[in-house]
Length: 359
Image 1 (cartoon, rainbow, N blue to C red):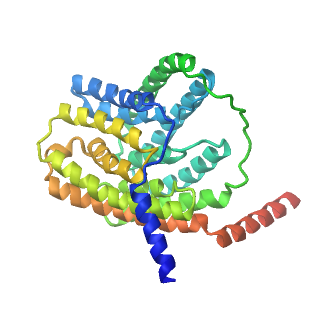
Image 2 (image 1 turned 30 degrees about the vertical axis):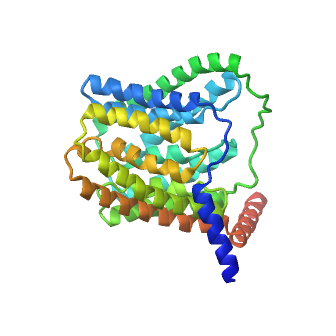
Image 3 (image 1 turned 90 degrees about the vertical axis):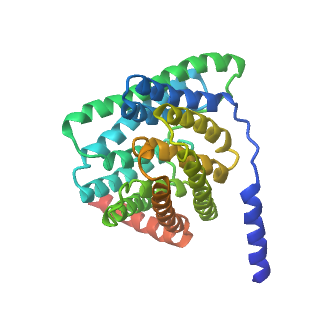
C-alpha cells in the first residue's frame, strides 16, 4: 500500500512539472488578447474603465471558436455571444436577494451544463457562462442599469466575433481546417444527474459565500466550476490541487504587481499581457496557467479597489475565497465521477421517465 502511495505521489509530482504538447497556433493567444484588450483600452480612453472591464469579459467568447469552417466558427461564436448575454441578464436580474440569486444560479448551471453537453461543446464548456452569471449575480441590483450592462456584454462579444471573422478569413486559407462531421445529438454519457450535481454545488458555493458574508462571494462558484471541469475524479483532484497551489503562487505575483501602485493604464496593459500568457499555457499546463489566471481575474474583478485597498489584505482574502471554492469543487467532482452513485441515479431517472410515459 505504501509503495502504491509512493508511486502515486511521484506520478502527481511529475504531472506538476510536465508540459503537454499542443498543435495550437500562437495566433489564438494573440486574438484572445486583442478581444480582451481593445474594450479595456476604449474604456480607459473614455474614462469608463468599469464599462471596458465588462465588455472585455465578454470578449472571452473567442475561446469558444472551433477550428473548422468559417461558417461554423461564426455560428458557434454568435450562439455563445447570445449565451453570454443571457447568462449576464439572468444573473443581474436576480441579484436583489442573495438566496434568490443563489437558487437561480443553481438552476441556471443545471440548464447550461445540460445544453453545452447536448451539443457536445468542447472545453471551456459551461465554465464561462457560469462565471459571467456568478459575477452578475453579485453585482448591486439597479434596474435602470441592466440594459446598459447587457449591452456592454453584447458589444464586447460582437467585437470578438468581428475579429474572429477577419482572422478566420485569413487563417482558413493558410491553414485549411480539417473536415468535421457535424452531429447534433444527445450525449448519453452526460446525464441529468450530472447536470443536477453541477447546479447544486454551484448553488452551494454561492450561498456559502453569502452566508459567510464574503465581500465578493462569486469567487466561490467560479473556483468550484473551474475545478469541476475535470474529465475524471483524478483529473478533478489534480485540478483542485493545481488550482490551490497555482492560486497561492499567483496571488504572490499579484501582490508584487500591486506593490508598484499601478495606474489604470498599467492594469489594462497587465491584463492584456496576462491573457496572452494564459492562452499560451492553458493547453500545456493548467497549474502554470492558474499562476497567471489569478492576477488576471483579480485585476478584472478588483480594478477599482486594487489601486486603493491594502495589497496584503486583498490577497489573503482572495486566497481563502478561492481555496474554499476549490474544496467545494473537489467534493462535487467526487459525486460527479462516482460510478456507483451515477449508476443508481441513472436507474432512478429511467424509472421516473417510464412512469411518466405510462400516464
